Image 1 (cartoon, one colour):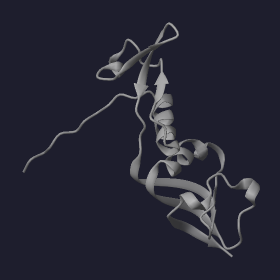
Image 2 (cartoon, one colour):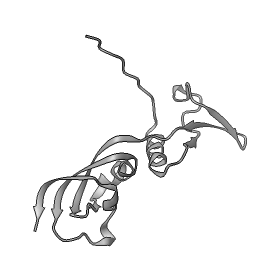
Image 3 (cartoon, helix red, strand yellow):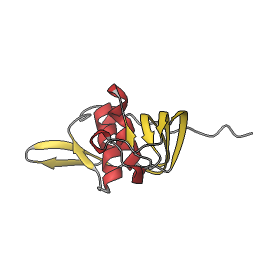
Image 4 (cartoon, one colour):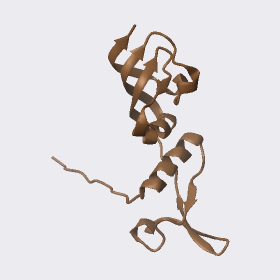
Length: 132
């Protein structure tokens, strides 16, 4: 049996988040000075602009994103509590299929002021509890 190979790419967390955001927004990539002069720049295009070097980081997209939210309604709208907003929001825009695990699925629509990810970005909801 062939064990195969695993490709690993070093990515600073901020650059990773921006690459995902670029993928969700349909951008061609981002320019960042983070990683210049380190292993992070190996094999990547360097662009010199305004007397400074930048790494061109290409956008990232996923086939499937598994995200978490505190609340959802039957329209797929999601709201978050605390730090769970971080990568969940950008991943919801950068995947072909989005599956949201939620603590509470509400029968009533969420307050629009509390919606962080609109239901148009969510394909499936897996709820721990249904609130009537």
